[in-house]
Image 1 (cartoon, rainbow, N blue to C red):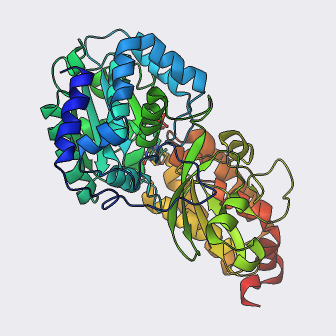
Image 2 (image 1 turned 180 degrees about the vertical axis):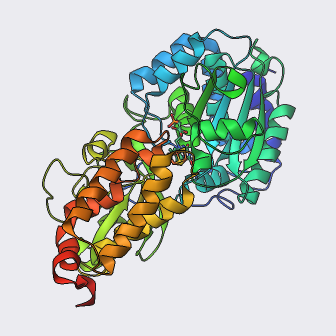
Length: 460
Ligand SMILES: Cc1cc2nc3c(=O)[nH]c(=O)nc-3n(C[C@H](O)[C@H](O)[C@H](O)COP(=O)(O)O)c2cc1C
Ligand code: SF4
């Protein structure tokens, strides 16, 4: 079926459907501070109706366009937009796609990472629950561009409603000729499988995800080649986060606006806040400004001690201007890949977790200890540096809290963080030192109070 017929038939069928727009969409309000690209259809489209997506959202016009302009032109569009992957590391999407496209193989795969592996993040839950087709369209555009005929969409097994929506969406796509042989009357053939997987922290890491799809344990592995060259079953495999793919479909539909319009990020605001929310904001807005806009109050009124940005391996950010060069930063730090990296951290899951109670609310040593204990629990144990490093650091932070540590222990802690950074094979271990190092940069006084005066500043 060609695109014009697809649209005409969808229009006719939709006329007979009950309008349920937004009924199942997770977020309907758009804050004045938001700019939605990946979440553009949320609350506007019935996530259970492919017809609604096609008719009201120009759905699958991006795929149609991709098939008519050709593979290289698709990749060139992503390159022009400067699109960086939204899964955490900010890898250039066009570069990854071109690497996979140029890899020679008899078979290639595309994997969509929709695990929401980081605690607190709600990106996959929100996007798949509110607008699954924008992700599926991006997935098919990716498969076409790299020359893959099989895609896997990996979702946290706890997201039952989203999985049911996705399976139903795939059935409807098959009925409409958007999956299978000769999609939209072209020579492109492809299928998509939904895989319900574990939701542990390491399961979201791309090599662990590939292992899961191979029926193996969810353990990251040391790669000699990028998955785009050698991935699933040793074949070239494009792994992209679902938000990246939703931005791809917007770009190819010409719905992202300005040339750099892919420049937004979905952020989940959580922790000590009035109302948890998942929003999409323009890159460049500062952490503090976003928090104030979302909460409708000033930072002073909110009584923030710190914000951990980027998930469990993210650094802390706090009011004031910490010494440059250290890990961590001020709440004025703009949310961009470059600024977050300059603060010695990673965009990660872009969760903005508030630790409240004002400057003296919570002891920073306790904050760092809790963050390290979580990472220690989640470490898969494969790398000695990560397994032993996180374990020893929890013990040492306990020693500081119990006023049993010395200044030399601090030196040793810094060495352990460096050993984890250089000796770990995945991002969990590599970045595990960031919460502790940033707590030290921003709240050295809290550590000093325990080390030198034997008391906890939060208990004064
Ligand atoms: C511990 C760990 C957990 C991760 N969890 C996720 C996740 O839940 N979802 C995701 O898309 N990427 C996750 N990633 C990043 C992926 O490994 C990978 O970089 C990403 O999916 C690539 O997609 P992108 O190029 O579209 O950003 C994780 C990485 C690490 C180290
Ligand atoms: S860095 Fe940690 S979580 Fe990652 S593979 Fe090594 S032990 Fe496992």
